[in-house]
Image 1 (tube, rainbow, N blue to C red):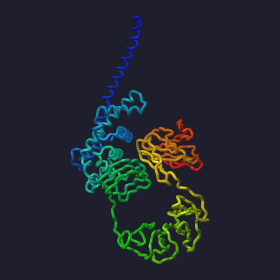
Image 2 (image 1 turned 180 degrees about the vertical axis):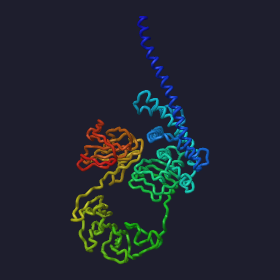
Image 3 (image 1 turned 120 degrees about the horizontal axis):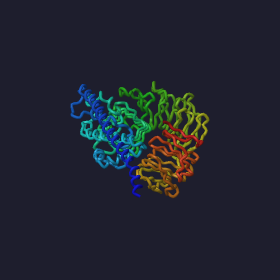
Image 4 (image 1 turned 90 degrees about the horizontal axis):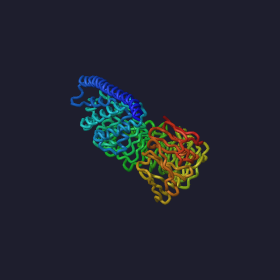
Amino acid sequence: MLRHELNSKQQILPQLQSKQNLHKILHRRHFKLIKQYKTQSQSNRNSILQKKKNDGLFQQKEALVDIFAQVKDGNEQIFGFILKTFRKEKVQDCIGYLSDNGNQKQLEQQFLQKFNLALVEMEQKLYNFRNQMKQITDGLKKIKNHDFNKKDYSDEKIYQSIRQLITIMMIEFLLFLVHLTSIDNSLIKCGSNSLHLLVQMNVDLSQKNFENIKISNTSLVRANFVRCDLSGSEFDNVNISGINLNCAKLFHCKWQNIRVDQLHHLKGHLSQVKQLSFSPNGTNTSIRIWDIKRGKTLSLFYSSRITSVCFSPNSSNLATYGDYINIWDTKRGKILSKLNYNGQVICYSPNGTTLAFNYIKLIIIWDVERRQQKFELCGHDRYVQSVCFSPEGTTLASGGEDRMIYLWDVKTGKKKFKLRYGTILVSGSYSILMWNIKTRKNFFSLKGHGNYVKSLCFSPDRTTLASGGDEVFMCLWEVKTGQIKAQLYCNNSINSICYSPDGSKLSLNGVDSSILLYDSKAIENNTQLNYYCGVFIQFFPDSKTLMSYD
């Protein structure tokens, strides 16, 4: 028995000695890495400090260039991880949270769980993470007390003083500061200045998620927010002249004291102005034709009551609609044609040869060159409220008070098909409300989401409603009962949900540009058919093909 114990100890001792030796090696390597890093960091810092002294741009103890130099090792991955943690933990004091030792250890554990690394690699990863977190925390402390978080850096004098430093400012850190405004109110000023600098640097901000950011007292002139998500954002005293918001999401925004530079105040009308229309070349507008550059009237067309105006694509003609239709020669100010119709809507075809307008329940297609009627389109049961040509000019869409949308063949004047608006309306923010359009009453309130609902989609047979948003799951609801059928979990929050035309498939597009495709018949079993990367656009009519872009 004694001999057996001795043999066991003899087997264990070499293992312990081996582990102790490994620990000593790692310990020496750890301090060697620290020494190397300090040497490199000091060298980099000295070069940046020397540049600062040579430029003579800053007199403050902690110059802005120093702060940005301190966070140079930060990257999109680490900033994204911090922001995700802040939102999950509902943090309001960012610096206080990062300075807490307990929170630091918790962050380390959560970060390292994402990697499957060997012991030596894990030690290196942990060391780098700790160093990055210290840099970011120290940088935030200093930037909070810096003028960058107090003054308006969109002011021309201040901006000129830092213009040369923009090239060394880290874009990821500026974006990080912008996102922090949605979490910590004490950092709104530096986040606002950061967004201004990103605009000045011509950084591509399109298709980015800026939900719930808070921006104040700055200028975002000519900012490009195409396809951005600005839902829940708060803007106060912001200049948005020339801002591009095409296809941007602007749900639940709180924008006040918004500034748009006024070019001219156009005076001339003696009564109420009901409609304005820009010519395609941007030089003329309304029944009074104005020179926008000079702010003066070029032409004045006298007519009776006007309810609608529309330029031809080449700006040579102007159609006005009221008690009757007049087609004007914009250069000579003379009427080319006068049509005895009265209505509210009028539209030129893209090539300018055809005019479409409503006459009570009818739609008239007019040949501009021959000055004669081509077709009289009948289909609506009540007043027509809108007409619009397709870009190629071969199809006309019309909508009216009868809740019907018709598509017409412009060449033949025949109806292609009709679309019914429907009788059920769905709306939602945190909860989903289902309304009966006829009775205008809410008949279901669907409660299952704890955050914003960003996408809703009915199945083609109208029996199921899919919903998703700022959470990692999608809900399926029974339309008849308002009861939840299933919850489908995914890797990230959801941008959009869409059923295929035949209802057999359900696509889910995440904020991480992932596209998940599910079998809608086996959705309760979480049956995933495929995974793609990109931004989902739509299914093709055959339900076998989907369209996306990278």
